[in-house]
Image (cartoon, rainbow, N blue to C red):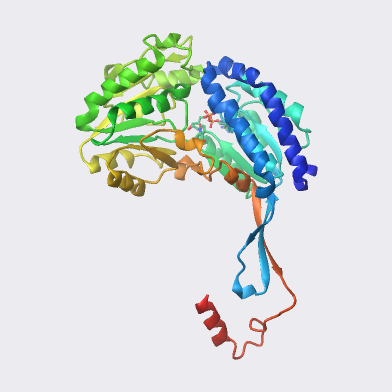
Length: 442
Ligand code: NAD
């Protein structure tokens, strides 16, 4: 149980993890390629390097994050010194998805270990190469009583969920999030649920259209659109649509060339089930760009869909693939009609030079987080909380916040004995007026 109370031990194991990840970086990148042809650049930037940076940051800050934090005492308790102690929850279960299978398994694990917990990780069964290398790295790094990996699918997940945990951290879809929340409720186990949603991308008439197109193409088609915070659909001011579509097409070709299936920079769909789901979303007569598919190669090209009906398959659920519907609006009521049709999204993007328009949208809609004039990049700032709201999730993490969510915050008042004010003790006769005066003054 050294990991519970010994910060030095936690740090040593995290350093060992860092060493083992750095030593295996090429193998991790290869595993990600073998799983769904994740391009090397994306694998390094969004997975291995991201995790390495998280590890370095955690190791560097662990002492200060873990030590009891002194807070300003309340005069009511005078004389006292007051503290928040960070206590490990105990046994933590981390369930990870497949789309960033290394990063989304390792980052919560790192923070849970840093906070002094025992961790069980269930990586995704849909990315077996990555899950296998994760297991090898963890086995090489940690004692089995400290961190353990259970590979497998729904059955394994359900067996783990049937156990009693002190904290569950789940990343995945909203329907499975509900299953996790129900299982956690059995034992009143606290949860973080990192889920998804239909992320709008609103573009008004003041936007820099060319730059917007470039940043949307990047955020939408990185990882072949299989990103929880990818723009799900564009909602653009009617008069801007034609120009914007031209820019989008130019940017897609610039990024991936004319033969996108030959591009080394464009990933594949993770499996046949998801490929079929996405293929069925493509309404041929609405396609204005792309729409090329190959079931054997699990390939779907970047596809633009013009003004689909809100009842069509592509507008019914989170897309989670390289298909971008472009809808138009004329009034703010039109915007509202579309956005309010869906649950609170994980991300929200606004492209506009009009500050009050952007401010209004941020104030009017509830969502996890987002950007003005960019997509996805809010994820990269460790000082920003990352998480959803409503159906897009419960709780948030990243940076110090990740350490905090895996710790119970224990409040301690350390009372001095040199003074003991009589005010609070019975008999209360004649004391109420003075207590009220003090409370009013505070
Ligand atoms: P998923 O919910 O199908 O699976 C996630 C994990 O849950 C996997 O480990 C899987 O084995 C397990 N699981 C699946 N079905 C289960 C069941 N019935 N009972 C118990 N466990 C089960 O999600 P996914 O397909 O791996 O990932 C895609 C979803 O995840 C998208 O909705 C996406 O938006 C979301 N996501 C969210 C974030 C975030 O940070 N908020 C990040 C990545 C993905």
